[in-house]
Length: 405
Image 1 (cartoon, rainbow, N blue to C red):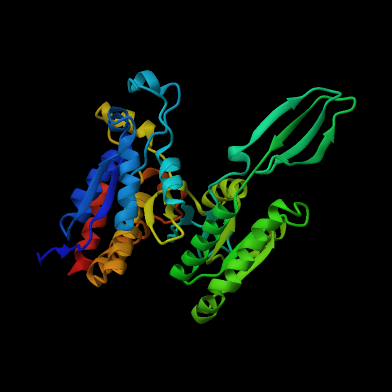
Image 2: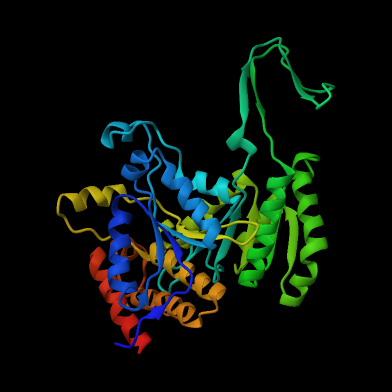
């Protein structure tokens, strides 16, 4: 075999948990290290090591990502009560994704991977739709109360000089009720907007943004205004030069347009809208296991991962020595995305070219009828062959070897 492809700058590598951790090592052994002289700064984000380091490893990995600019992350466990005794945890550690997102001030972009034989439920969707979700504030950092009949609820803001401004929310006359307080910050909305505009330029795709500013004349309107201002001042000429469009509309209009579209654009959504719409889009295209996820900071730091979790059920089967047929496509594409971006930033075209070939070999394998069980259940290809986790990677490698010659 010819000499391995060299990497100039290290890639931050964040290992994870359960079945995806097993797949992580297989991908490296079968598809990466035979071709690339991997240069990674390794962080073990498995729950055992997070517990041993009091979660310091998560913070360290995020700081390293800021330093080197590109990271690739395996799926990780966010522990619930059941995980406390299972992993003998000191405390219920927070979601590593949430921690990393906060440190990088990042926006999450999720894109389906399209293959022949798996037809989206919306047949006109011939190109992928990328959902950009603002991952700060709104209902996810809300304050809420149950209110008794006869109460009066007000919004009270006290400025830095102690002056109060009040607005009536509701007089609960004759009935109990509920109230909820939401917030966001101009800083976070600006970061979200810049990450979206930069990513659109990266992909050379149109960017849509949608809120409900006709009803929410201050809150949602603020999002609309900040996006418009940043676009006009910093991105309009760049978009025109790239031949792409920034498009604002109401969220209900956006949903109607999305359903009638062919795809091929980025749809930016506020936090809750993005949470709901990314699952809708993932399901409509086929599977979360065929969905990439990229965290992008406003200053151009990238962290790539699969959109799905740790595949716990398959891991327990694996521990019993049973064969699994676990879909590794989104994790492969996390590696290819990170390697391509590293190649682009370091101006090492061999590395970016390898990433393209790895993706091509993966798609080719599925389109030639060799796939894991979840894809076999969706695929309309005739004479398909369902294979186990490792065999699927070996089959991809057969095609990758040919492409690399």
